[in-house]
Image: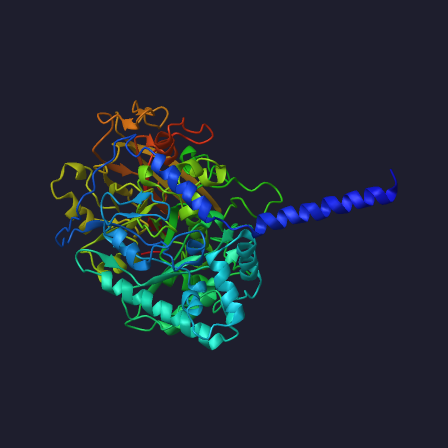
Length: 637
């Protein structure tokens, strides 16, 4: 064969390869034929393959000075979000709030979505970066560029998605809407109209004492390789800035806080909540911006003022902790989304400053260095649903993270990427009543906790003055509030031993409780340490030799997902003292409650289609709840 022959062959192979890749990238995500096939699959699913709880009506507790717990979702997306719309979701913002209040709906291929119990509160956080897009598409004076953008929006392909992400990742980011419209003033006007509509719809659904909504949105600068350093912006009332600050207005979180502080003047109030620290490539708690600029003390101070919470559990995984970087806690493997970074890796993995526990430890380190703790955050869960179904966290009702890309059941079980997701978590708030003011103030004081989707009730108090028989006292809650502090609070150092009061109650339609754990972090001689301790078990005392609870005998029948109802506890109360406390150390303590095992969503889906559960993912999960910490500060008098 001649050299020219092989040259022609190579050219043909390269051209052919290019055409194949181009065909793949420019083929629509989903066609009408695909939709019909998926709808047929939905009809073949057996929704009666396992027992499902019946929908319940909302319950409205009376105002209580000792506080009620309210469950909600502070992170969800409707069809207003670009990455929800292009993947098939056509359920509106108005429908999202109706779903949160218990209404049953179907996704675009016919899978039913309904919360068994309505939420108490919700904030839909559509991406500010694409506000105005739908108005632009309806503009009578639409430009050819906008027309093309809108055409691709209705018939999206991978090339379109990658192009938009690439534009967003450059510094400074490029707005595809501004580029298409060739008129920034008009584009910003459309964006402001969308934001105004969001505020109005939240106002329409807000019912003090019954169901609380918050005007909110997501600030969404992307990182390479599908990373993110996103924050949800939550407003206390309907007195909000005219413009929703996006990544095109504020390049970094520091710029975001400055813009919000400048334009949100009383009676306007806001807070920001970062999410997915596990996918921040270490930036979540590193003390530097997306551009590599180190935080100043003023930056840390501003963060401390406006960012009281972290969303540490959602559909894209658990961000509590990871096994490694000084942690040997096996429970950190629960719904873990990414591996630890290997040497030389910078993206697609977990860094030493990626997880909430890492951030808490860094906070007490910083307190030693700069005199205050800027990372004394409370912890919540939420969903980050892109299906317009906030709070739909029951494993059996999971319909995937994003409409047709992850539905129906057969598709969800096909790839490891989709199998990694989970139904998301909930935010639990202790407040006197279910109103915007009461819930927002509770978020500011961090009297909140996270769950993996279950509705465990969790109380957590700390004090240097509790009597040792608090568990036997009828008015234990009154004493706990009067002599101690609740989760999210601080204690000053003392010569006495700190005592903690914990009270957990099971979710009445979920599994019994298995155990309660205490997680402690502290500083000593310039180093930071952590320890995980079983402190109360459902099946007897903690083993004095091992320090752990005896393994539960609870089992799950994988043929129908029935559970061991008579094993485990309805509630667990415990009073625990830290005999190793040192008043010269800064420390934090938080609680983790673990349920008995239940079926994972992938097992329910397997039953729907009559297949065995995939063996590369756990068939069961132990749902959890995590309190906000209580800190002991040697700097606090």
